[in-house]
Image (cartoon, rainbow, N blue to C red; front, side, top):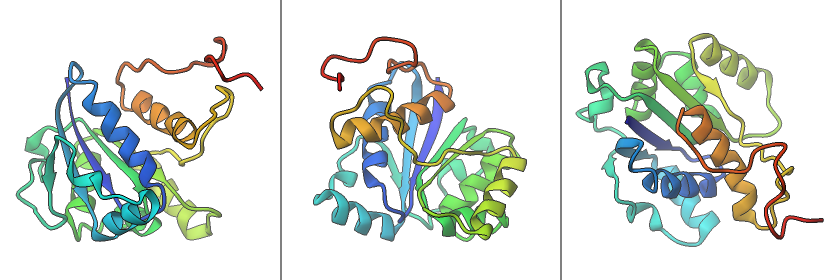
Length: 193
């Protein structure tokens, strides 16, 4: 049973966060506690991209971006995994520099110092040299950079199916048992080209 915090920042890719929260809530036998923190920009991007504001409707513990009383703001909270999805390059840079100026960057710092699992779903293209060096710094500190790069070998036919290829990879990286398409197995029905 894992304790997981999901952080959503203001990068494009709200669909990834929505699908991840939906799927994690269906994995109650593996997830003991699920917490959420969002930036104001994340809420604005969600509403712009998805034309709705369902981010407040998920049955999770939600914390404000400056609420340092959140349990995952301390190593004693014993959260196993933090997933930042999507992870803006600004957030990535602050984490890489050790700047804990909000709950997201503080929680990431805690996860790294406790040698637990930090997964940053970077959503930017192209990368500049600062982005690459920040990704290197987080990787060297024990974090995982998982670019929001979908795969197509399962032959997805909808935007949600395309986004799910990234979300399924993130769930695998978190160490959860996940029933999803695997390379070398037959394509799902309707996936023929």
